Amino acid sequence: MNIVVIGGGLAAANAVAELRDRGYTGDLTLVGAEPHLPYERPPLSKGLLLGSDEPDSVFVHDRAWYDEHQVTLRLGTRATGLDRDRKQVLLGSEELPYDRLILTTGSTPRRLPALEAGSIPVRSLRTLDDSLALKKELAGHLLLVGAGWIGLEIAAAARQAGGEVTIAETAAWPLLGVLGPELAPLFAELHRSHGVDLRLSTSVDRVEGAEVLLSDGTRVRPDLIVAGVGAVPDDGLAAHSGLATDNGILVDARLATADPAVFAAGDVANHDHPSLGRIRVEHWDNAIEQGKHVAGSVLGDTTPYTRQPYFFSDQYDLGMEYLGHVGRRGYDELIVRGDRANLTLVALWVRGGTVVAGLHLNDWDAADSLRLLVGATPENLDALRDESVPLPRPDEG
Ligand SMILES: Cc1cc2nc3c(=O)[nH]c(=O)nc-3n(C[C@H](O)[C@H](O)[C@H](O)COP(=O)(O)OP(=O)(O)OC[C@H]3O[C@@H](n4cnc5c(N)ncnc54)[C@H](O)[C@@H]3O)c2cc1C
Picture: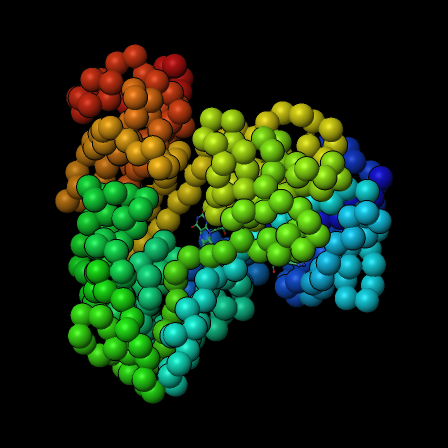
């Protein structure tokens, strides 16, 4: 058999490793548009910007690993089309045959062309090269458009580098969609207490020359604009070949498309999750675990992918982890245990008696409890509400 993986990111690196771990000995090729070996993106907005991580530390495997595991690397090479009838990947004028194809093309930052109307440079942060370029500019005046996770991490790094930071966020609070009105204000306070000029319910009206006009009537003159307004899945390759896409490549519970030879994983996969329904997850853990899972599916394993979405963030002295998914169905109750003022707490979102999501801020001991609780329907919710009762730990059932 001959397996080709398109996309040189985290999902791709984990897929090829898992294929070899499971004993697959056939041909294996990884095609990646970037010139770099597959790497981890979380450090790009954290340790790399802060200078606490070296660029060399981000790679999933070193080059020798791919040689030892007989993975043919086609880096700096963009797949330009798929001929699914003839089972060929098009690389410009070249064709690459496959028996099984794994699409892990990830996502790309959303652009706001209006930001590019003036003379101020506009950047986004997705790649290693973006991060290395941004690091050199952190000490200036940054206007961040969008207070999502990546934007807030850039803000923290810039403040720690002595930069001036203005953030324009259209929502009433940063991270409102994920954290809700109960917890999102904590992140506004965190950044303001570190000197960030955070403008909420504020958008960019227009950019004129070196000046940005904000919807609150003020003007700012940043050295650099960074757009942090989300990402769109890179599903064009799949769509043009006739595969079903809708906010990502549509895959079933085990990450297979309707074409029995083609699978997808990571940011680009819109997955039919057995308990959460259709979901596309743009997180590190999902890229790793779906990358591994899809390898099993390609080799004939029919197990569905059931893992709960998980992500983490680090901003200043705050570390946090979030597990689960609230989704459109919302929640009936939010249980908060701990100390909001000191940003040390555990929060549990509950719907119909089931804990649908949970997070901790700076309470790493709670991570195991969250794994136990999220997705479960505890018999005694009062015990969770009562802070004098410790959260259940895995060894206690
Ligand atoms: C700055 C930053 C910080 C982050 N921090 C966190 C964090 O703290 N916690 C967390 O949980 N998640 C974080 N994430 C998200 C996480 O990194 C992503 O979910 C993960 O990288 C997705 O992996 P992937 O392999 O699916 O896609 P990607 O990492 O996007 O890789 C896809 C690769 O495919 C390539 N490609 C696309 N089209 C083609 C083509 N036609 N031919 C060949 N190659 C192609 C792309 O160039 C890219 O290199 C962060 C992301 C960014 C950008």
